[in-house]
Structure formats: C-alpha cells, structure tokens
Length: 127
Image (cartoon, rainbow, N blue to C red; front, side):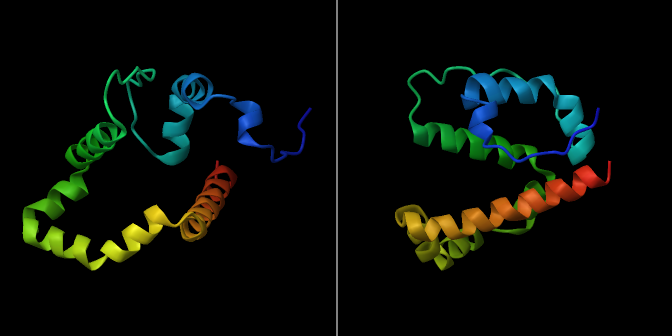
C-alpha cells in the first residue's frame, strides 16, 4: 500500500550523524548517485580523526574538495594568489559576521536549506 509522505524531524530517523546517517548514506550510495547525478564511489565509514583539531579537519576537507574539483582547478589556472586574497578581503566582513553572529548566520542557512529541499523535491518528482 502506498502512503502519503510525511515530514518528520531527521533526528527521529537518524539519532547520531556518524553512526546512523553516514551508515544510511553508505548503504544507499547508488540511490544518491542516481538521484543527484553524482558518481560517488567507495564510501568509507567515518573514522576517528585522532588528535586532529577542528581546524585540521576543515583544512583537510577544503584541500580534498579543492584537489578533486575540476572547476576549481580550472579557476586556479587563471587566478593568482593575489586575486584570491582580494576576493577574501572583499568579503571578509561578511565572513566574520556569518561566523560570529548566530542570528545573522541563521538567515542564509535557512534560505540554502529551503532551496535544497525544493531542489530535492523537484528531483524526487522527476524520478
């Protein structure tokens, strides 16, 4: 019997992100690849980061994404470090406010999440 989909808080389905949600994503990697038009492969279960600091994790994640993204690599070929510094300096006040002001940060996060939900809904209706 087909039932109507209902929204429920994600934490009711996946109590712990690393143990529950990540495992679910690993088990459904093929569905995610089809739905999102990705080519993710060989997912590894989250491993302990040991004595790494949060900053270490952020930089590793940034480096992994930077090296793995063709568009970023192409952009790096035509932009100089000075251009990158200018872009960062130009938006520094926004980044600082985003990081320091919880109320300010909530607005764009909610907007991005709503956009993602809409996009996800459109993707589901196309399959």
